[in-house]
Structures are given as structure tokens and as C-alpha cells.
Amino acid sequence: MKVLIVGGGGREHALAWQLRRDDSSIELIAAPGNPGIAELGRCVNVAAADVDALAALAKSERVAWTMVGPEAPLDAGIVDRFRTEALPVFGPTKAAARIETSKSWAKALMTRAGVPTARAQVFSSASDARVAVAAIGAPVVIKATGLAAGKGVVVAQTVNEANDAIAMMLDGNAFGAAGAEVLVEEYMTGEELSLFVVTDGTHSLPMLAAQDHKRVGEGDTGPNTGGMGAYAPVALATPAVMGKVMDTIIEPTLRAMRDDGCPFTGLLYAGLMLAPEGPKVVEFNCRFGDPETEAVLPLLASSLADPLRAVAVGDSLAGARAFQWNPGAAVTTIVAAHGYPGTVRSGDAISIPTPLPSGVTVFHAGTKRDADGTLRTSGGRVLAVTAVGDTVAAAQRASRDAADSIAFAGKQFRRDIGWREMARARAS
Image 1 (cartoon, rainbow, N blue to C red):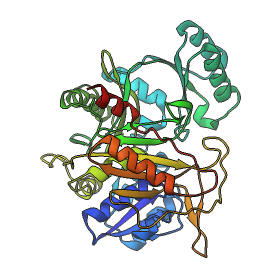
Image 2: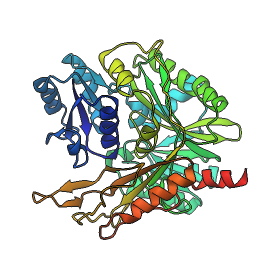
Image 3: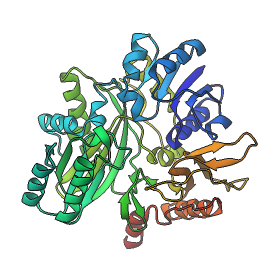
Image 4: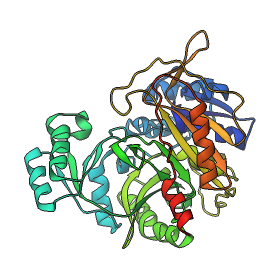
């Protein structure tokens, strides 16, 4: 069976790795892929957002189904196009993908559905947004409403910082059309969780909750990034809490999308805040998260391919077996390039020691390979180093040591991924 994976980052490498773990006979094709995926299957030089070329590739290769990794091709309407061509595909339509691609649309949907989330106002005028900030006070959250590669959110601790973020997005056009509107949003307190839910639009299979680390610096300091690491499981994500999330957030959201005529199929990613009054939505994404995917999948004991394929071909998940998980914990440490998350330097030679320690997997994200075989940096987040251990502390230590052993000029990484979980363990 041939499976096409669209994308070329760490998330797509982790998905390819898991699909091959599920079924070693699967023939993987990735577009465009990366050097890590190339060790598992065949990479084809087709851009992830080139919907026409991807449809032609799926037809010519006669793939059984396609797995879409990043958000850009979903926003470009790849699922709509593939369905028109009768090509099985895992992901939401362009209309349903608005739950990520338009934060203002998603906020309005949640409000109509009664889904708990932070109060927010939408502005295209910088002066109006600044008036709202003055009325709300700090801390306050400023968000670009469109896709900004995980960097369009500023948690402002002062009014001046909020006004600077507004000026950057609306006056400075930092994110182009994605920042033509901003949300001025209430600041929520609590801890964040990331939850993946595989859904056919009506029935859902939740996965293990993870916690991402967005800030570039240790102790969650510095600017936001696309994610500097993640760990799973999270002790706060008890069965009772996850049941409440499904009942008050996931199910009402899916119902509202069906009622709006844009049922969501694929992977719904709920970014959650465990606020004192209960779980609330920070944001939704329309695809697997990165780096949470690299932390969650190594703990999976059951098949990922089976439910993904079922959704891709249009089958119902009614009666599908819940995901099963191995004991222990996983920690993913992102090894980033010089300058990240600002101006990034590419082209530095990378050395990854072999063999890797037992329980450690390195997923490629921003890498490329020269004709002579030299591996080089080619992006901000270069590698995702995941370790599985009996505890978060053991997994963190193994992940950190493995990240330390990787060499390239200017590398940077956080040494404290999972620090909240470890603090809870010490306090108990």
C-alpha cells in the first residue's frame, strides 16, 4: 500500500516513522520530505502547497491515501481538490480549516457554540486596538488572526508591550495578510495542554495530551516560537479533565461545524488552558502539532494508520477502538539554528552520533543533504530529539544528553523541557 505524506518537517518525519512502525509494508512517498523521511521512503520534489502537482502525484503513483501534515496546503484547499478527484485524503476542507486559518472565525464559532474560551475583540485599525488594550489593561494577548507559523501571538505583560505588538502587526505588516486583523484577547491563567483528536466529523478518538514549550528561553522566557519542545503525558490531564474537554469543547465544536455546513474531518488540535474555572480553548489547529507529535507518537501502542486511513477514505469511526498507550513518558527537545526565532542562519554542517542511545529518536525538521552526503541546517527548528523513559525526568535527561551530543555551529536548545511536570513530581 502506498501512502503520500505532504510536508517536510519534524511532524511529517514522526508521522512517517509511526506509519512504518504500524505496517512495515507501507510504501511511503513524501512531498517534499526531508533527509530523515528519505531513510523511510521516497521523497519527491513537490512543494507542500502545490495542490495541482500533489493531485497529479497522488494519481500517477496510485496512492491508497494521502496524509496532509502542515496547515498551508489545507488552507490552499488540498482536501477539496483531492475529493473532487476521488483521491482519499486525511484532513479538513478549506472551509473547515478556518478553525485555524482565521482566529476571528474560530472565535465567533466558539461563541455561538458556547465553547469556553477567552473574551476577545477583532480589529483592523491599530488605534482602535490600542483603545481596547487601554480599557482591558495588562497582561493582555495580541494575536494575528491568520497563519503566522506559530509566531503571531504576543502575551504582553505591559500596555506598552501590547501596543508594540499591535504596531508590529498592523502598522509594520510583520505577518502580511495574516496580520491584517488582530485579536485583542483576555489573558488567561493556568497551564496549557495540547490535545489531538482524530475525527470523522461526528465521532472522535482523542490522543494523549501533551504540553508544548513555546518560549525560546528556559523557564519560558523570551519570544514565542513554533515550539522548543514538548512532553507527554501530563499529570493534570486526568480522565475527569479530559472527559470535560470532550464534553464541553470538542463535541460542541464539531457539532457547530456540522451545523455550519463545514464538518471537520481529520486531526483537530485543541490548544487548551486549564484555568481555575475549568478548561478553555486558547486556539484550535487543523492538523497535528509540532513538536507535540514527536512526543506523543513514540508512546503509542496501537495503530495510527488504521483510524487515519478510515477517515481518509470516508469511513465512520463509530465503534473504533480507542488509542492505546505504552507506560512511561516522552520528552522532545528542539535543537534550533543560530538566530532562531529571528533571522536564521542556514548551511551549517550537522553531526549526529550513531548509534543513538536506546529509546532516543531524532526527527529531522529543518535539514538538507548535500550531494556529497553532508547534512546541513536548513530552517529554524533543525531537529526534534525525542527520548522515552520511565519518568519525565528520565526522558528529559536522555533527550537533553542526546541534544548535547549533536553538533553544528550556533545550535541552541532548552534544557528544561517538562520542568512543570518535574516540579509537580517533586512536590508530591
